[in-house]
Length: 505
Image (cartoon, rainbow, N blue to C red; front, top):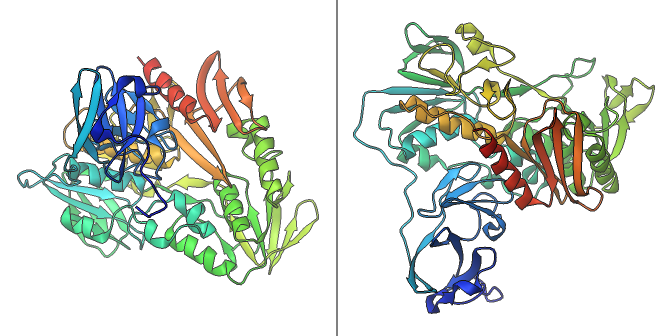
């Protein structure tokens, strides 16, 4: 702690009273460390006050049973152990012992933190994970954390270790985060956890009968259980000139590096597509002071997901920050640095980023004969049509108990949570995947949080003011709230998630 930083609140080693709590929480300190006291039922817990994901303030979070949820990105922690029980957080929080003398609460000793690796007696089981993204990493990490002691081989066609992909279009691309923030775990973690992570490795086939995978080099690996987590890939632009070297998509670390490198000599940027990724790229490159044009066929950006009012707000927010929109238009061809629009206009840009959506990587699933319906069909336990083969993340289409539909979504947090559930079920548990989908999107200093899933909606109930950046939107169909979006109403968004969880019963 630097000299100009002082610990928060009262000295908890001297004790505080229950009357000092506000909404069941009290921020204080033990020595120079900040500590959050949390009242949960009849118990008092002491825990590190900042989420281990992006340091969200847990004092503004939601207590559910003996857990606390982060208001920013809905990570969840055990108040008893500090363990991160739900993504996107991975690392545990520090906890302290609490003693009570009637209504006096005293905090003194910090406990040893839980280990990220728990391995029991070695077993001959061989688990293979195909994919190095959110779902694949979360599965491998969960297997070890929950005591699986067999072999884990993780096959990734990427050249980089599993990374925090949302950062690629946000802070890292904007130049606000160093590259060493990106890896979810360092190289030593995979060594300590005995996870055989193989990068730049293609899988050419899965044979359900012989329980083996064939690698691109012809090698075969046997498995007892397999998780297919191949993720999604960007949709490619199908117009003349789309294969030029200054035209980029964004999915991997290599993609983000390439855009940053190209930007170093660029003067004007063209973003094709007003998707979440496209607009996050626009915001990040505006942070680097580039002139940015966005071309998209929609009347409003993100209208299909967020509705017209939020779409107008998002457009206005980007325009306030200098983005130039060309909506209800498309790019027909790229001739050198010149982009010809369907409307007849021309945009000269020496860097083009295409963000027109992604498609699930289904080739391996189809080759293996797995049942598919616009994604790999899985049960409520994330098991495919072949016993012992599971699927998670962007490729999985699962029965969602809240929307009462079979859905597939492309959200980072959903992929992580599915990876965790799939891992437990690979170990023989029968855990239903029933988490409410959640994602967040950042545009300049404005975060948009979204829980639930509404492929379509009849109406939108708006509480507060979108214009004033203080709102909660409820997306309803046939009278049921299917999804909720918010700006700076983080606690309300958490409560909406909890309401959806409880309505599943």
